[in-house]
Structure formats: C-alpha cells, structure tokens
Image (cartoon, rainbow, N blue to C red; front, side, top):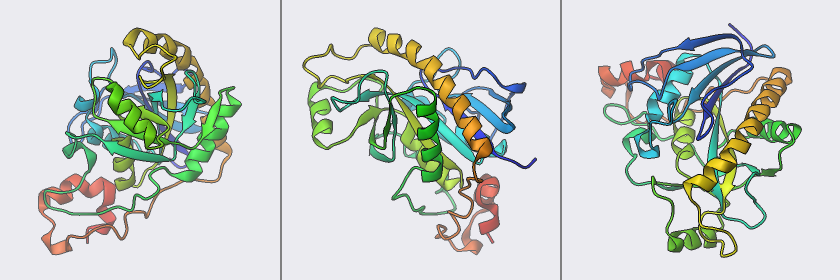
Length: 289
C-alpha cells in the first residue's frame, strides 16, 4: 500500500490509541526479539498507523529494560516511514511548565547501560550514521503544528537530556543539567531516535512535561503521585495531538528518511557476516552489496 504512514510510540500513561479505523492487534517477532507489546494498527484520515505502548500495557518495563531495537524494527516491518515518540519528561526551565509540550530538536545522552540497545550495528557489520540533527525536521514541524492545533502550549525546539534511570535525578545532578542549558529530562527517547536514523525512519519526539525535576526550590520535588496526576491530564491532550498530526500528515508532502544510510556503512561487503546480513536485510539490505 502507498500513502503516508505514521507510527506512534506511547510513553508513560499512554497505552492505547483510540479513533483508529480498521483496528487490528498485531503480534510481531523481529531479529532483535519481541517488542514491548503487541502493536495496534489501523487508519486515520487515510494515514496507515501503528501504535506501540513503550513500556507495555500495564507499564511492565522500566526504561533500562526496553527492547528499543525490536520496537523500531517492528515499526519498519509494518512499513512505518514516520515514527513519533511521545514521552513524559521533567522541565529544566522556569517557563516550561507542567502540562506544556516540548517538540524537541536535540538530545544529550547520559545513559550508561544501553549500548546494545542503541544501535542495530556491530557484530559483523559496522556503520556510522550522521546524527548531528537527531530529529527529522519536516516531521518535527508537523508535530509542532499539530500540538498547537490541539490547543497545547507547545515549545518550538529544545534539548532532551536522556538519563539512565529508573531513579529520578539527585538534586546535584538536576542543578548540573540545568546549568548545561538543557530543556527537559527523560529516560527513553534518545535510543529511539538513534535506531530510527539507522532504519531510515523519520523520527520526532513530543515531550509532555509533568514536573520540574528537583532543581526548582519553589516546587515540590518530583514524585510518582504528582507525575501520574499530570500524566492523566496529558494523556487526552496527547491523543488530540496525534489526531491533528495524522490529519496534517495526510495533507502534507511525503516525509521520508530513505537514503540517509547510503554512505554510512564502513564494513566492506565481502566482510559482512551472513548473520549480520540477515539481521539488517529489512533495514538497509539495498546497501549491503
């Protein structure tokens, strides 16, 4: 099938996507194992869509346990050319308040134990993708327009610091990160952005602000109860943004990241192992020689 496609990875508090026509639950296996949960497919405004709850239904998976490679490979298997990751985050700026959205354009990596889940490459095939601009800008712009059309206070751009978790920051860490000029802090989306680039998928993040982390002396320190309260408010807003994004994507020029890995492979074709070829065939088979 031709036409626009859109994958949605729902973060904390977002475990389903209502409003899809021709709704179907799909169980997928990938060369990198099983994704976080079964995916829901369907259409909206003629856009083929796939939804995946990042942490699984019931929120079973912690950030450091997420099968990032399987999640993005599953989106590729379903033909998703665009993927948007929705994520709960803490704010590092006074003017970015709980309930606001940040349509981020940069990432900073402070994770430590996710090397294997941060790339499809290695173990028989080496590639180095260009990642100076980690978010696919045409898709990010559509997400920004969709957020504002849905009635959100949406900040245009910002740096997302991805921490390891699952604990929240210490006060010293929070103050340090704030001094670096980052805008929001979360635990998940950077790995998705990296893998989407390697899979030639256009990727963008919609960050839903739930708290001020623990740097803000005038606000209570972040805790799960406070986060969940804001998440419940944000969940409906996130769904409205997805509807507006599907509407905008249906009317937009095609968005694709095809070709961005063409010059990224380092390993000589004759040296790529058979197992690596099998794992990477769907992603970049046309470049393997």
